[in-house]
Length: 413
Image 1 (cartoon, rainbow, N blue to C red):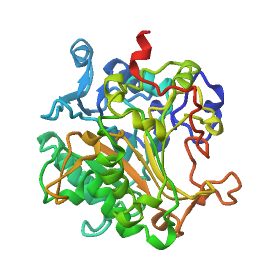
Image 2: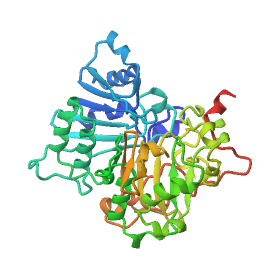
Image 3: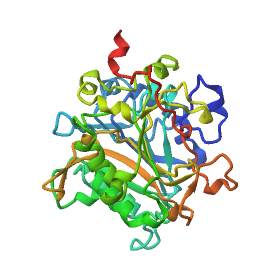
């Protein structure tokens, strides 16, 4: 998780990181880098590049919104390319970095943070950092056991940008054999031929293939934690349960009714008691008034174990946990909020899906990572390598009767 400077304990936590740390020479001497994000503050980015002595290193930035005009007045090596999906409801929402080092190895970072100061200083964010991926001695080999290399190359290729051709070649030529997570991405798409490559189609396919039904009982809760919510329909069965939940059960429709679904999203009091307010939580009252049924599912943001209860969550996670809250069948860290635009909605009787946004996440599956059926998420875990460092407290705390779900309009009251 990212450090929160106003919470000193997070600066001491071993599993905390800053943006400047990603450019630190301890990870390798950077030759150039690629930043893919929704929002980029170039002044904040350049300040961190300066701290890391990387201002003279070429950087390609793909963004949707940015103050790129500030680049014109400053000497820099940044090339910025604006990416905006065709749909007004879609966004270029991925948060990903790829670093090329002097030794020609590459490293991939997938996070939930925009490249802006408040995201890296004030909010709870998640970051996954890959091992170093050296050039493959044999390009026909070096694929990850999860297919990460080909999935990443496909994702970059979906942009159809000449500027990315070099990065696609670097990915295809690297040895990803030490990468054990699955890439789960979304790109704007409407067809049926690539349903299993993106969004919910991808999640359902991977979980059906890699997470055996024998290791997950139907009563294991599905826990959704996000920083924003889209228009989901007038009933849970419109999309949340009929599409997202089914996909995240590995397409097991026959167990859907037996599986509890819990949602972690801050209440008004959580935000009032926080360090920096609810600026990272843009869910609107106009949307909520059409789906008040959500209050049946919501639980408070509590992260005392990671010292971040007062740092509102911009992190997004989805996971399947045991009823005693000690095991995880899988865990997904992603840029995708709870929305049809991010995950896609089924079309053509389930043969196609409509996705509006660019998103990216990494799926942790214990069978691939530790050759066991479950991650240990209990505080009594004896072996750190088998313990999944969880971003919030368990079990989730249900809203009290007096609690109100946070909506952005509270910021102007």
